Image (cartoon, rainbow, N blue to C red; front, side, top):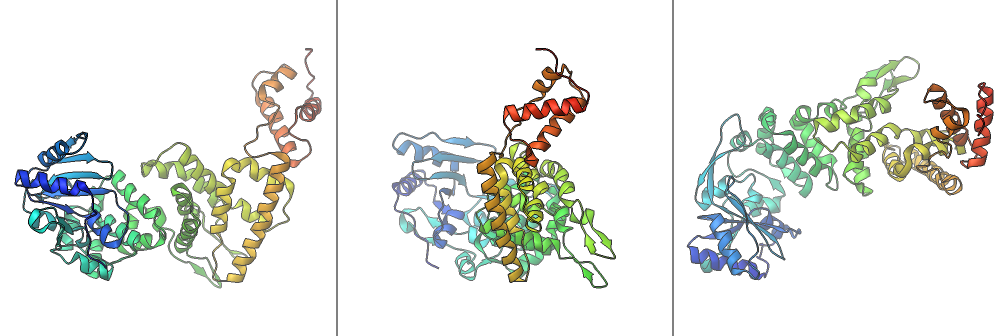
Length: 472
């Protein structure tokens, strides 16, 4: 672990000169300093001054080329200053006091020491001086550098007070542990578990932001295991927590669907899946507890969990304040279809089955196949390898059928309007049944999705149902 050094940017000299002119000692504090020590990229700088942070931002702006516009947030006592190299937020050193029912503090001006003490974790309470006498010197009142070296998340003060004051810090502790692959110091973790009920005063938007950040780390399972063992997961995502556990009757036991889900999530992350594919991994088996049944002959079953899970997706997205547009529909589709490629692996792969999968998955077929490969988890490595080889066969078949029939997101050439015009029908069940019969014939490969072939079949289907084409 190396001592962080301020980057050689004129901006920092400008801030130092402005702070000196105003008589307000200034420091770079927090995540930027932590990331310098860890050699991680960071583009946001927090500057704390012992004085008026907004006034310092305005003075810095006056001294910079082009005098960039300062955005002031008076309610928070902060100011943002964008520069070509980096974005800087200025704030005056402060101390805080909290009311039990809110995580919004009462704030008043304070000393540098008071400002550092209010930070969430020791690794975020590091500072670098922007003052002439000791420019660039490290400020480390709580051994944050030691905790970086030990790979520990620890609060500067009593963790019970830290978490009770602002319960969002409990999720941030888990998120930083997951992002940095750090441990949470034992006393800090115990306090997190003791104060878990306080999470109820945090807004859903804040909770979801932290969950999304946990999902996007290289190995997301770590953060979710911490959430589960602390009891937080039961409070913020009870349906996911309910996946945990194994029930056994005689020789029949099912796998632990919580840890299976986490393995699938890690597999998707390792394959480069984006946020929504990771959400699909989290939710693909979410309805298994609700569909679990015991059958004396075959053991535990979860029939229909994919359909029930897909029906739950809009409600879960609503509860988590996640977007309800294309992202939600994509996750819902992946949850609903996640067993289909696995079923193809278990049987002879027919063109008909592949056509149906291509038609239903559309442009999400590649993402679906990635999810399904990730869903093959077993301690029997030869079994996993066998399934993955079978998936290679399915994917080759998908490619062949797609090239031949162009069924990804296809639309039948015979529309409802053509059916109504042909037979003089109004919108009715008969029109829908003819459309469905034509679609089935195309998916079964009895006719190609070309006008003449499909129209000839339409006339046959009409005649079988006592319909004759009207005179043109």
